[in-house]
Amino acid sequence: MLNFRASHLTDCPHCGGTDTVEHPSPLWRWALLPAWTLIAATCMAASLIGPMIIGLLPFLFAWAVCLLSSLYDRGYEPPNCDVCGKMVVKPFANTIPSRDVPALADRGELAA
Image 1 (cartoon, helix red, strand yellow):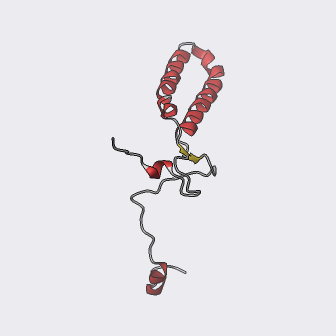
Image 2 (cartoon, rainbow, N blue to C red; image 1 turned 180 degrees about the vertical axis):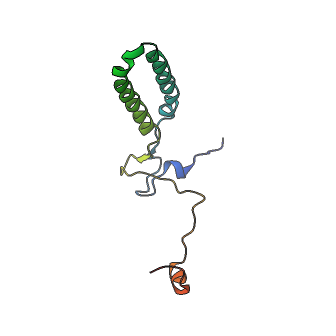
């Protein structure tokens, strides 16, 4: 059986620990769908109560913002190392290489 372990996803580049990086559970991202559905259903139900919506609207808005912000924070937080506690941010494959700043300054293209 082949081992397809992606070491760049589970190994910490800071402390060198293997299999120490813990990613957030994908269930946090899946929980966003029922949350958005619940918020939409609550807005539809609140629209049926007529003028009382004016008093209820700030509470509904605060509830929806708290619910969504906590789910987005937990679902998309960067992975952390269990040993050193540092965030492990993967490098982007399409990063732009750094430009040669002294060469640009010599040609007068870089304002001083």
